[in-house]
Image (tube, rainbow over all chains, first blue to last red; front, side, top):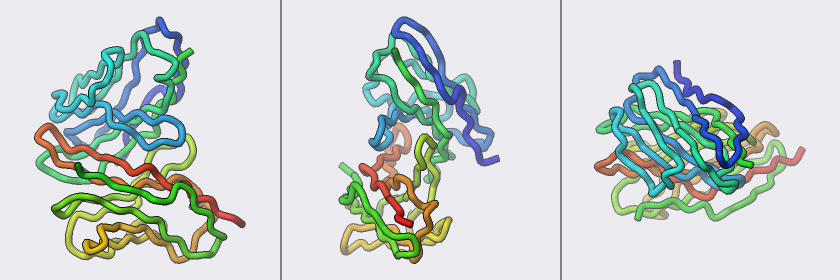
Length: 114
Length: 115
């Protein structure tokens, strides 16, 4: 199994809603990532979890709250988002330090904030 | 800071023609370099990677890339393009930090294939 599975594929939410994005992998990877991608732009790193601990936060606003319940799961909790947060949210995983290797990406969750 | 640059925003080629997409990196030590492809509305698929060793790297779908330290380049090539190759192509580099490995992307090159 070399897949990273993201749900939901599409999400529409209002600015007062609370929702979550979910990411799952069963490759035994110990590093998991959230990226944000706006239209016609490259993905931008948001968070990195390494061995279930948050290791990198790229100064992301607190309305985005990541969670890593176990080594296979990664969530992104969303609250009080703004319309400019509408984007494709990509999850990725890799073996984790000290290994170096490619990141495996999911298909993404397309978020629309009204 | 370590980064990659893709000079070409858009490239159009005819089906069957050869392709070269440019990528330049800036980093002192040998970088870890990747090429990913993204079809519209999809995630990213790894085409190939370079860590060390042989500077000519073979990837999936008939793609290859050559690491040239003297030119700080990692250009992607394909001898004969197919219409299905139309997509966005990202060059990326892996930055090793104490907090974890970070993958940073170039701005991307949009490939259009004319039939």
